[in-house]
Length: 273
Image (cartoon, rainbow, N blue to C red):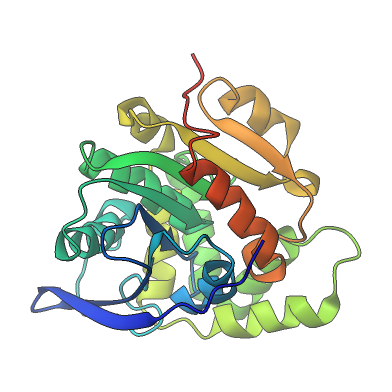
C-alpha cells in the first residue's frame, strides 16, 4: 500500500467548560470519514503511521479522548458513553454525515457507544483487538469490578504491567513491552483508574443489543480465547490476525491500514444474520 504525504490539521473542540478534545484531521473535507480512537492510556499519535498508509481520498480523524494525549478535562464521569461523547463532539464539529468509527482496546468499547449515540451517522464499528477479552469487556460482577479497581488503586504500575503482559504473545519483544508499560503507566490521574473502572462496569452485551451497525473485530489470534468466539461469533464479525501484540496497529501500521481500508471499501459491511 502506498504511503501518502497527508496534510494534517491539529484541531480542537470544546464540549463544555470542563472538557476540550484535541484531534487531527487529514484528507479531503468531503471524503469518506474514518474516525480512529486510541486505547486506554494511549494517544492519537499511535495511529500516525496507520494514517500515512490509508487511501488518500479518506477523511481521517484521530481523536485524543479526555485526559489522554493533548485533551483535557476536569469532569467527574469516566464512562464509555462519556468518552463516546468526546468523539461525537468531533463528528459534530466536522459536520460528518456518515462515518466509520474504529477503536483500539478501550477505544473499541468507545466506538460501540458512538454507534449507539449516533445511529444515523455511524455506518460501521471496527474494534482493533477489542471486545473479545472476557475479563475486561463484558460487565463484571460487583465483586470482580471492585477487585479490579482495587488492584489499580493499590499497585498501579503492577496492574499496568499485568495488562501489558496479558496483551503480549509468548516470546514477544521485551523492549517493546517495556515501552508500552512506560507510556501507559504515565496516564494522567484520576482519569487512568476511573477509565478502567468505567470499562469493567460497561455492559457490553446490552450495548451490542442496541447497536445496529455491523461490528468487525480484528483480534490477535494468539490472544483470543475460543470462549470469546463462541460467545460473540454470531454478533461480531471476528477476524483473527497475526500482526503482533495487542498493540498491533503500532507494530504493523501498513497491514492495519489495509484492514481499515477494506472496511471502508465495503468489503466487510454486511452484518452477520
